Length: 488
Image 1: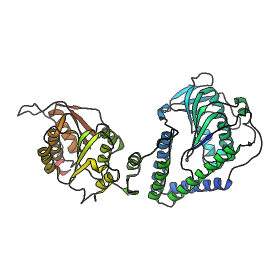
Image 2: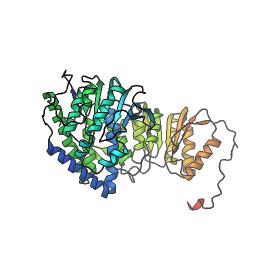
Image 3: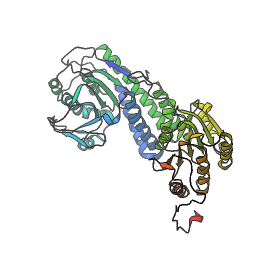
Image 4: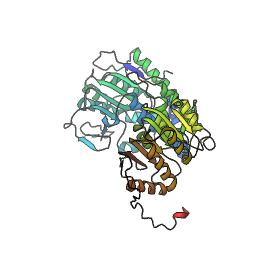
């Protein structure tokens, strides 16, 4: 299987469509595809875990990798949805949606042309009619709808614009659609999992010729290059079938590893790698609570969220310190910023509790040359670091240690001494009772820190100047009346 993007450039200068039977569809592959997806759907309905895996992996494929492959920002895509009738297809009414699903334009004569159109949906009336059909039968049913969508392109897509269309499987009808679109666009690209991308709208046939096809059965006389292209797509279908069979057999790790190898091999339309180790790990950390070490997927049970990790990574630079390492996820986000010179992690349980997973994780991504571990309690390691490096040394300090008020305050106290003017302290899990009260103390008693906007679970403060408080300064920071505090 050619695992890179399959590209087809139409070299046919025809301006009309030839009606001639020439079936190149491999029905065996379509039947196998149908049966595999039906089996997977049955498995999803009966197995809670596989439903989670499939749902998240599908999200990864559709929303992350597919759009990255084409260098497309989802916010730039307009969705087109036709409100039409299957028995009597109409062309006069359709709706555009933006990514927030707000109506943009209604009716066919009042709109502004757009550069990117995405079609992956049908209206509820149509969906009710196809939801229980086999996937190949769905495509046969949707054939007229897709022809209507293609007709819309003439009025709503800019010259040289782009178009996404989804396909359940590769029926003869869909092969015909792809061929029609090859006469409308200069280039077409395909990756598995339902999406095709059509680039540079440059019609070589007229809309009226497409309309004439809507109520007719037909096939085309394809050129040899197009036949080769369809054969390549059929090979990709077989890859999809094989990977879904792995998932049906409950081998989640093998499935994710297979997908990982596939996406590593993909290049976008400008010949850049779509997915790398760091990008892939950030995804599987969040979606599957796994990390990849030496080509093996290892389950983890402690990690920061991606929104938190991206925030921490954004502000990481120079010399960094973290209190609490665990599986190495926060360290991974920090060191994924190339502006970081050195990171020190404090974690007394890296070997005993975490089995050195964090250390192995960083080593696997060649990050260990910028990393050092202090396997000691923070109240021991922090004074040692202050003695070794002095004050005003670190640019960023991330606190994610023991979550009681006193431990968090001790960590912050030393972090303040170690931090440069202009540096940042980030504290995790601020919704925990003890940590929350400590943050209240910082907000009221460390006025020389400027709080900046951050994810709700984090506190982030920039040190604007040195501590100039009087020796007996204190500001009330809590009004706790909970009699059960000592029991929590």
